[in-house]
Image 1: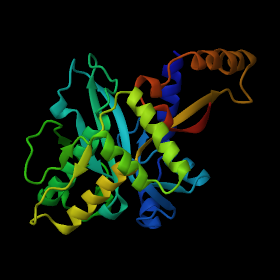
Image 2 (image 1 turned 30 degrees about the vertical axis):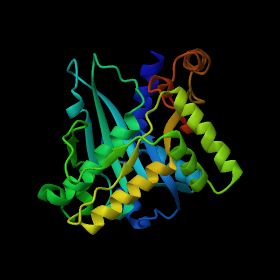
Image 3 (image 1 turned 90 degrees about the vertical axis):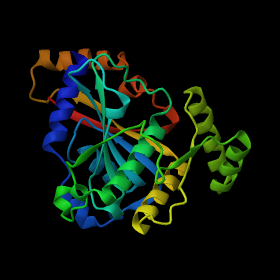
Image 4 (image 1 turned 135 degrees about the horizontal axis):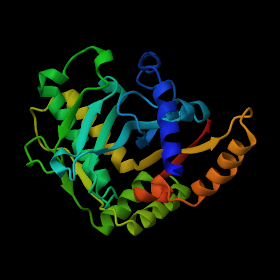
Length: 293
């Protein structure tokens, strides 16, 4: 009951308070804010549009990652979804914005828990989409209004082709050198070490991506893939809404008692979505949202 009320209220609020795509396009590729290195995974229940959590976050902290991926985890009415059909990838804005959408589909018997390889599968799927978009005519349209909503099924077990990203697992020496070179200060190095310890506890697979030697690759595609790889090396952050449901001032005493006390008790004692998705605590950013009922 607690989770159902929160999910329904949050979904209805996001549905009726979507961020205007024209507003985003009017800001330009920089979105009018500081774009910091890394990938931001913004979790939302919406399969189309930009949720209100994005504008709420930007309003309070005018900085965001260079690569943004709006992730929507959906349960479909089939027992199992094969890995080849699990990821739907699309683009929200034109290429310079580096904003994508990923719909992760699970069957009602599938386990939605992240086993440690979700980030790598997501990066590989986005890379495959970028390359497919350059050659498929149905994805090469120029109208910005038609970007959002166009999705493609990306297989996570596709055969390695000449244009696929090269995946390798670095040893501990290479990892330490990467930390030293990418961190400008002792503080950043200590934070990265803490992140590595946390992700190691979550048994996350460390993978390094490289571009293949393909002279025929389109320069724009190559630049976008390089930005994606560099953002992955800089780190991945998970942005989720931390919702609070409160009764309106005009509500009756019984409703205030049930929501402000009863519901609050249930919410604090129920497992949160970050725990269910096995998201590393040090990589999690929660944005507070208050919903009045």
